[in-house]
Length: 116
Image 1 (cartoon, helix red, strand yellow):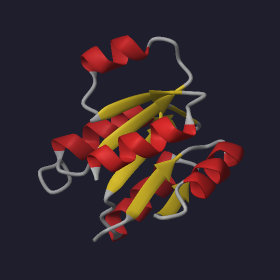
Image 2 (tube, one colour):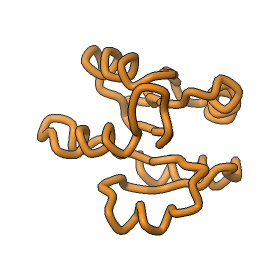
Image 3 (cartoon, helix red, strand yellow):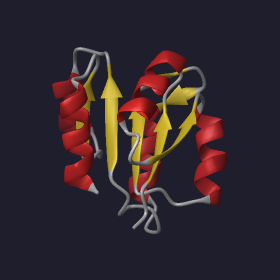
Image 4 (tube, one colour):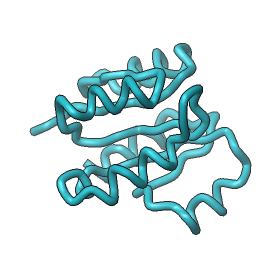
């Protein structure tokens, strides 16, 4: 079973917390869209966890690129945001799930388990 999760998150503290929470998975963390794209071209993860606001791009756009590509559209994507307009994102978005920050640890693990 592929247990590789790609996390696109520019906040090192949040990335570290996610890595500790998801200790049963192999986590590859990326701080920028360009780093994520380079990693994505090498391996196919079981799931992607994407922050929305990033220094060099937008996690929603990354999600759209993943879902529009026939070879990667099957990969589940969870979008994380501190933005209060998560309902609007759900209406427009292509992600499999959306998670508001700060998030509950159990909620995060349950959502991932449901999608993998």
